[in-house]
Length: 151
Image 1 (cartoon, rainbow, N blue to C red):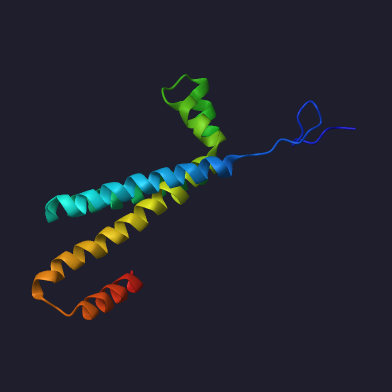
Image 2 (cartoon, helix red, strand yellow):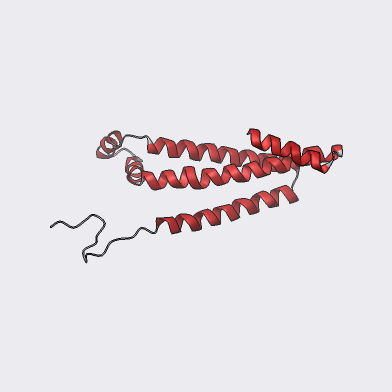
């Protein structure tokens, strides 16, 4: 009788605690990116905050592209390159071996955190732009809700 793949040599099932690692990574990155955005918005010039917002947007796009590329990639060409000792092929194979985790980290953790923090920064920057015109606070929030809902 063959043992299941989920059993170790003692017959006990292996448990994956990947979700715990992802939880703490997400918590740490959210706190770090939130701290960065809050600090930039409150202590620097508008242009610096806009550049940081642009960085968050670029990181979001790059992470989504990397995660999607790895998820849809074929392994065979990289195995061939690794056999020919082409630089970077072994690293690519290691990433492809763990494509599900790589995709989860890039798309679902880093990309989504950057999107949420960037969206909040965008709303805060719009509020800074509108503030000098002394609009009614209620109107500002209604405008921001419609802008956010349309995005």
